[in-house]
Length: 401
Image (cartoon, rainbow, N blue to C red; front, side):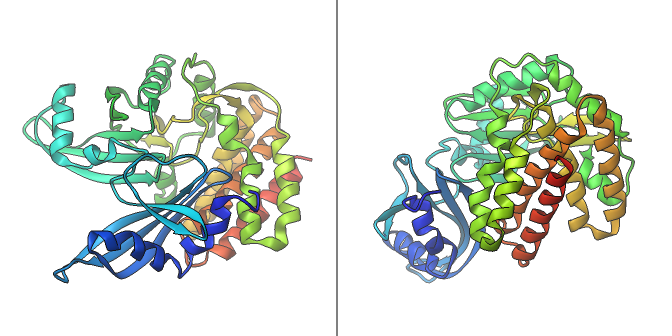
């Protein structure tokens, strides 16, 4: 990120106390006053954009309180019409209320029970009262809405809506169908609303591998996880993404060096080693980890979030999975020994397909990515966790030499 990057110039204003002034200026034209606010998460696409997501309590003209989710966004590219523009140090900051994301025109519809019911009727989904829950939201990029239906023909979780930019919903539907045909247990496609950028996919049974490990439930043998990679590698993806861009470890260096300036040299060296990955380049998941795999009775029954699937390095997929498995113990210390042992077994199982040094490079890069997480979600002890994860990355890089 260069010194002229607009996100670098205004980032401190959006993540510190000055954010109240930015939010206040954006809300004032609507007759709203801030009564309290909290920074929930920071999403930095280095060199491209920065988004800060806030939980804000406002008072209207009648002094009635309302809780809002507000985004402040800086972008090198033009921003579609709709948000309020606030100028900070000569840089345009675009502010909008969730769900009115200008990059995701289908999001208001996907978060309205009435509109979702209309969409489901058009797709032939069983009738019933719709319940909605936002499962994920990355400002300007994507959202995932869980849909439940209460009725005579269905009860409980039924499907998910993915809201994406531009034509990505249609392209992702093709990826799902191609992976399903190759034997990868991805959610089936219910339908697409291409003009709104909404993809509807079926919900699958099972729990995530992460929760199974945390709760002491049966988990698949490591070889079953390797088999998922093998099935992915045989899929002929006509609309795949470029997973190598997402997994490029150098893209994390600037953010992490800003957070931990004294570690810049170590970060650059670790990223250089991680980026030296070679080995098999085949269709991969692109973001393979323990929360992307659904398990039931010790078997893999689902593979989720294949938005980034395409031709990439097998070492990055395998290394990502191993690193994320190791990280489970940070959240659930009681199972740390179990998950570390399981991660080591998974790494060993991948030797059938992969040089261990390539997996080590992939794991080093994945740990650099994981190191950005504590700050992004504003963990109370984010600096300590960030440094711990950078050290994990460096340790894996040593194993790749």
